Image (cartoon, rainbow, N blue to C red; front, side, top):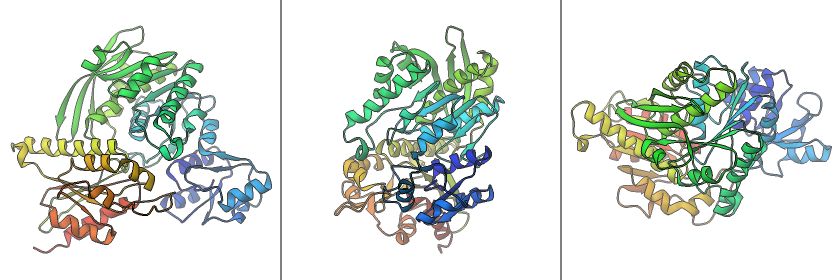
Length: 490
């Protein structure tokens, strides 16, 4: 497994090891994930070299890679082709692992990891022990994959390289559709097309598509998709659509720790069952993700033989209410407990697309307003939101610079770092300044990691929310910001 320490690859390695496979692999450097896999029996090399193919003492039967993340001239891939060893994508391996299981797949431009994670916790609460592979680690379980004893396999269906077309879905969710990964697809039209092909796969497998009717393009997909199609969303939206409802959100009460959602589950050809769910991560988008998870797991549970009644809905809703989040999804890194900035809270989030950025920042602002109201303060007396954003990929930064500027403007203050290139080579003139220059005086371009904590200290007030955001190395800054703010002198 080339890049075995990655979020998606490491989860599949865990499942393979649980099933008794001999697993070898490599990664650019060691990490906690790599160390954990070694403790489970995997043989893993630090760095990439052709000799890594014989770590077990013999050549592997197959080499697994991510075409998006690993370059074609990787020495292990070159050696595998020279030796005639099949090279497959991670999605091909996942498809093989899911065979003969009820495949519950979560697709969409945004929200896949959170919705997948909620679905896992919901089914666990119902005692169904699903297998799962997630692109992040569940806070409560501390893992990103599990080989369960139940009949359902829950996984993200990643569209970034069209790999979601590798699967045979029984129950599938589309949370939203918005042009992204245009470095692979080329045009928005090609990006939309992959979801139509996915919907066709669902119908071909006699499965059920569940689409978010609050999203324009997901709703359009639901209206034209073949086969069995259900929708979820807020009451007014669902009343206006002809798509068969599955979960309807009838009310949301904001609380200091998130929200409580009142929902109705419309049992196919059955009754309407009311339920309540606590959604601990703030934001309207998280309420919708919870609704999607409830509907998808209900259909999967019924396929497993559970009754389609109120008891099943109650158990699943209780699991979602118990969901404490996913690492790097509005994850609290700590609170400054001393010094002039005591009470400042530092969160970390993986958002790296303008729509995701806007959703998380709106949730942060709603959280600060909710906290102010809970202690009798006015909305104007709320704490401020400071975001430290690291753009991800040069191509995405070029394409969406103005949209990023608009989304980041939701924060009270934005600190823009330099671009995290990941798999791309630097592009002249494309830096974080491309975004910061389109914003007003509440934003500043801070290219050096070493200067970020000081930049935060200059604008922060006691109790403020600081959010490190992006899909790259910005996640490492949380601890440094906390330490620096605590060391400030009055």
